[in-house]
Length: 200
Image 1 (cartoon, rainbow, N blue to C red):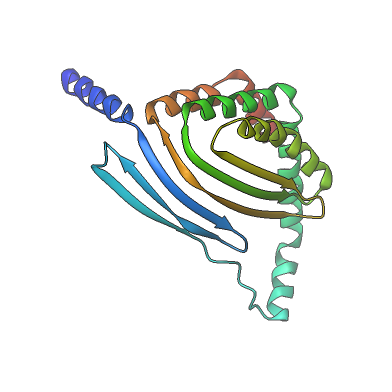
Image 2: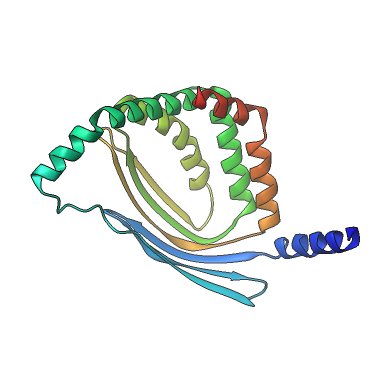
């Protein structure tokens, strides 16, 4: 029994050590759309994944919209305030911001980029939260901009909640290496402390 488990674990580790190649093209305006093709085990496994989400419906009648707002106004406001406070607590930690920066840098070194384009415009309801978010994303964008065959254009929007994105490219990585990096980040004391503070 133990021998079988050890064998299966060895096979799994060997498979995770085989590089994965991903070709993708994604766009987000009113909804996400795009395609992603995954190549693994030296081309033996090929999976095409369509990326598409339906835009928010805008066909509700005024009376239905009014009833929905009346039923959800208080919970939604409390929920937004709670989420905003959680985000502020996490981003307010200088150690956590530095840990996220290190994670992004390590992941970028682990991923071999053949070509990559990213255009992003992002804003939150509160301009102050947008500023804190960009204090975190700015260094990440700076690291991305130093890579070859990479084009990154990030723009903050302080007028309200907005998220538009366009990205395409090809990347290659070893799953085992990414699992090691991400698990190390999630289990680090700084991350666990930030998660605990967000839940308070």
